[in-house]
Length: 358
Image 1 (cartoon, rainbow, N blue to C red):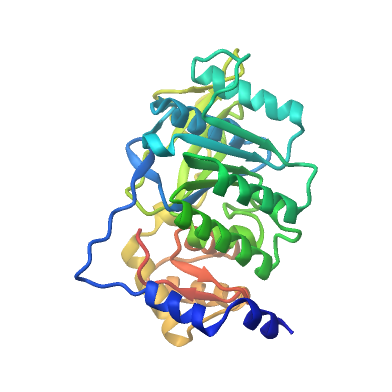
Image 2 (tube, rainbow, N blue to C red):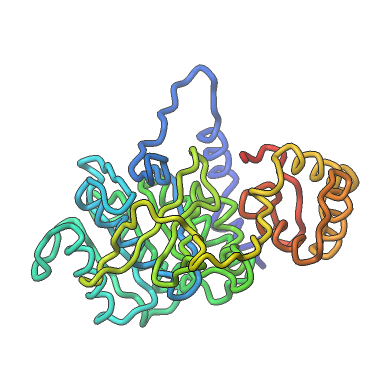
């Protein structure tokens, strides 16, 4: 039945036309995607691509993305973000799927205050949609129509992309949404920034949709409370195609606005108490050792399930002098996924990506 429906909507003629249109040539000139958002001078957002923010509940993800929006509306700098949108891509579309109109309005007012603008007047370049009351299909279609019909859209925020699907662990639903993001950004030459909750036990974005986001996004930002000061939120990249940026921290000031904490040492110890450093597979293991171990593992077989991968990694890393407990192996797998050194397919099997950038 599925094949019959596909044949009805996707003819051989259409496929041939798309095949020809997709051909690349070394003799043609292809333009580099315009860079519109930077963090600490590192590119995190370009037109024609999408990015994401992940973080646990109450980590201040929406405050952080408010700074990105404010920078875009000003074509200036807020916190460590700098935006530069072309004149014909100057409008921001903000889609919220989680909050009531009352709380969405508070976000709008916060953005306006960060821009130094009055709170009692709508900004002509900010379109804010509150979609909590709609179904996933309705949210998708409303967002699609706004993207394709609003003039001068350059940046789209989807605050709560989890609410575009019924099941965050559904491979088919997740693939559909990520495909739409790639289609919308390419056809409309916009940048989409999606926000998603993080798994409770690791740094990964939640569900299969989180895995797909991590695999396809040009940048994934992690917003988390500082381990030593829960009033402070820290921002770092867990994946970035461009040069990585120095993590930064912010707090919410007396005016309920995010405020940069210059010179703040992330994870700093308090009161001189010595704390045992948590195992960090990115900082504690060299790229060379990672490559040797991973090539050893995946030379034996191309894909692994989680449990057999855990055992294979423990054996291979031991050969380069690194002993892993089950907990450390779990941390290692999370880091390898975040850095796209290994990738997980729809059947939840892991394979090696030898072209990773460390």
